[in-house]
Length: 178
Image 1: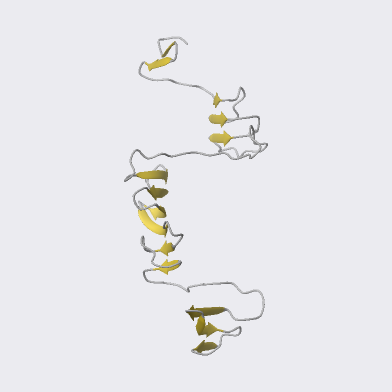
Image 2: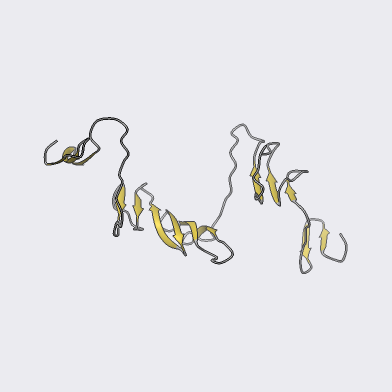
């Protein structure tokens, strides 16, 4: 390495302004196929799209599990994966709240769209789902609960095991009756 860009001395690495790599960088592989290729074994993807910029692969173990860990610094903080573009730095993302043990998915500048809490409850439009599925906010189009491909009831709602509301195949509705 020339021009004083990188110094290595028995495990200590000091960067003098910047490190520039023209080409691909490989960690654990001698033949990186994209800009960043981190490998824990021999597995290499056989086909990649032209715009792939990073690969994380694990072919060393028998379980073939590859993991990426995003570790927050405190039990009250967040671990975040943001998806941005050249105009907006945070149009969508996935974040984990360590204090509440919730996973949230958002599509607009950090706004929570879907939240899964520690009990497995899912909230759409709410960050505090009170039941298996909690939907909050106005529905501006049709609310589609299911897609039936055979005959039978389209939907039933139950209270303590008893059916209280039924939508039958063909569109008939029963309230308090099946």
